[in-house]
Length: 224
Image (cartoon, rainbow, N blue to C red; front, side, top):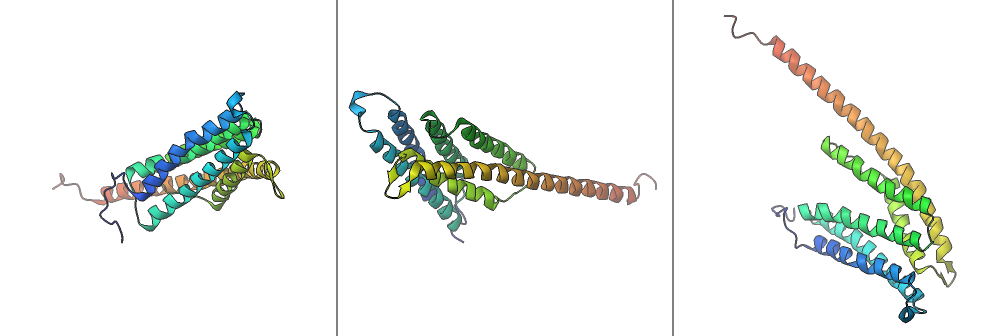
């Protein structure tokens, strides 16, 4: 296998470079969206360009998110820095973009609350599973939710009708679908964690009971 002896404290590798690049893009995307809502004279008639800039950079960031994970799995590159910064970069990118789109009036606040709280909830749930030594695979609903959200957000950033595509309408429909899938996948994941926790507890109790019986069956060394 490749990178079998890799140092898990390494930072300078291709997946981490892509993740860092994604982090660098975040303030540019947010800055572009912020400027759309400002009444600066030098930005007159630039709202469209700023929206398209944010949309294309968000798309580029989403592509790097796919490739850094793909390369890390393909080449078996697992580092402490990558495990920490990759999910943080994803959350920063999506959450900050959703909040900025809400401030521009392009996404209802309730939908943003659902999506943001879901991310917080899932992070806490995964932490609980990790602390219990459980590995719960990401379900397909969560993957679909992420993919749909990543398509809908840039459409709302550019917020224009392009050829036959009504991006504002398509984008908001996709975000509504993503919010429904986010609740559905969170519920499914929660049930999976609960089942795994119960099974884990049963195994521990059975092991403890078996150990207790084994100890009782051993002869007492003091009774000679």
